[in-house]
Length: 195
Image: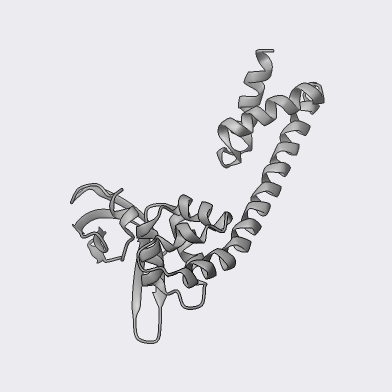
């Protein structure tokens, strides 16, 4: 399965591009949101991709961000929504706005997407709301564990829990846990040094 492409953009259409990767041309289907983020012909391009295999076809789908790819995979997991409809949805609404609409069960907003009726909008909202909430709970648990690890490490260096908790909370808001434990620890230490 092809999960990622990095190469030169050699053809560009609103729904499909061709990327030259080491002399081989890959032609992924893309949503309009990805098309709008692409550079010019012969410029470097990076895409997160999904390879879809069905009974009679093999197709490649490309996305400018992992978030777009993730919501695409969630969409095609819904009965009755195939890759083309999922691309159409992502072409009609940004991935973050789609997640907000799902979280709020905003059927009116979802049904404004071209080609999505009220019934399909309701199905998307109901089926994906639970998946998005589960993902957020897992990420929240990871954030909490990272925060506790930072607090513990700083307390072992002689700082008091009260001052450490405040600084760690500020640091995580500024940098997020994706930055890595070491960077968060360094940034927390810088802030503690200014006290």
